Image 1: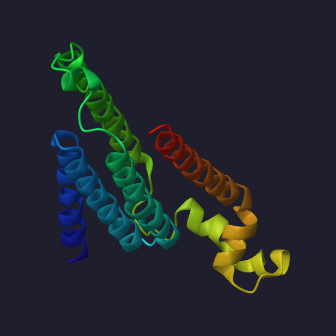
Image 2: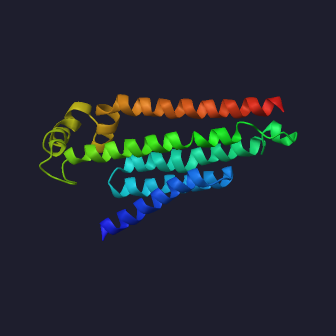
Image 3: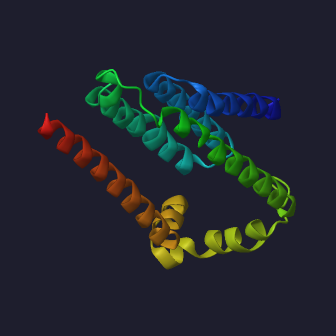
Length: 188
């Protein structure tokens, strides 16, 4: 039964991904993208990556949606050339450039699926991470880190640099968006 739910969620994720690109309205596209992020959050949680699911829920479905909607309401609906009655000569030229990222996305996806052939089976107790890394963390984490919670010990101490730099990137992105929105608001 679980794989049917996973398949259903994956189909919805693909539909939302195409819907985000195909939708002409920016607000509609933002809402579909938010649904995409929420569905990814559900998939991450179902796969047992609760920390990634939480980050996706907060950043992807939450903060990003708020920033996108704020940027949309602070910007104009049309380019200045169209408002003045002159057609934008680059409008149709830019539409063709959307096919390049789409093609690159398909190629990247195909390469990722090809690379998955070398992965161990899902939940395989004999895989390298389950036989070496996990056993080491379970045996030594509390003694080496002096943190009684195993998950906190792994995320805070063993993966501390990784987690720290993820938070720095999120913080910098948030500060950048706020500064851009603030500068635009001061000009008008």
